[in-house]
Amino acid sequence: MRYINLLCVLATVTCLVGSTALLAEVPRTKSGKPDFTGVYDTGTLTPLNRPEAFGNKKFMTAEEAEQVTKAVLGRFDFANRDSSPDRGAPQKGGDGNNTAGAGGVGGYNAFWIDPGSKTFEIDGKFRTSIIYAPENGQQPPRTARALKQMASSLASFGYENDGTASWLAHQGPGPFDGPESLAPSERCLISFASTVPTLPSLYNNYKRIVQTEDHVMILQEMVHDARIIRLNSTHGYPDERQWLGDSIGHWEGDTLVVKSRNFKSTSGLIGADENLAVTERFTLQDDGFIVYDFTVNDSTAWTSPWSGEYSWTPSDQQVYEYACHEGNYAMPGILKGARRLEKEWIPPAHSGD
Image (cartoon, rainbow, N blue to C red; front, side, top):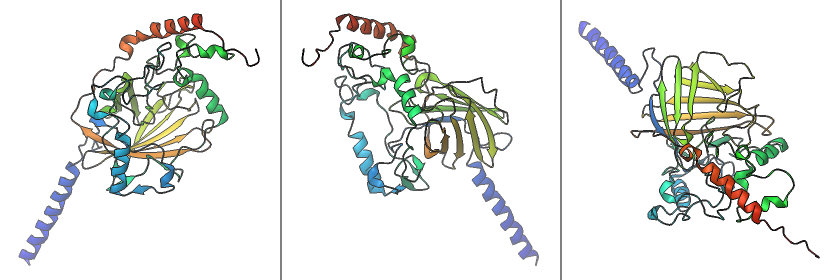
């Protein structure tokens, strides 16, 4: 009997030790909460919106994931990273280099592009898109209000640079009338990619997290945004609006849930407005990855809410300073180029003249 009791005690101890060992695989704070402190790469080749070819198919095979990877990487000439500046680079807007008067100079070459190296997987399954709701994996249609707001706030990004002041052919303000006419990200005020929710970008996808018992700070590599999440607090007054919104976090088990609101009328999430509300869920895995889930709710911008999920990869890299425009010294050049083109502008001849 004593021998049997001893075996039971040893079995119990073994189970407890095993459970402790599993628990130790996730770093924790003094209060026992998962500690997200570290650097993560949020780049992924999985698209935000699901390609129509997949329909309502949420998952894809490893072979299909490899095909997606090859297709995305094939758009850029990574084998010639020191090639000419226009190789594999976007030819208008979206990267802060859409300088008036440059006439299709392009953006960065492949040396600067770092969208990630593969598609992500969660629980061993490859997703066909980051968005999983609606069922088709695509953002819902935007409202007429949102489309109008986008056309106004992103006019400098959407301008088709033909080397002339073609904006003079239309009534109303032009995309380069003054500093305030340019998109907020071109003015280095916000990121070129959405920060809340966090969405992958063409480059600069690293995030550094520093966590205490009362706050979580997420430093974004792109345009130096430092996001401060207050834990177990309350939202500020609605008229205290911020580029990144007001973020309040709380714990649901081992998952950090963050709710953000009180955004400005323009934020890093293209098309969103001041009614944007975002709920995020951060879950730290045993392997060090973060499963990041988010839901966007903005009834004046989209016809319905939408949700997405993808994984953040732990990294031993550092997040370096992003000196946007080196103090934005490019702004005078953009505006001077626009003024020169306006002086050289020759209105197109009307038919029948």
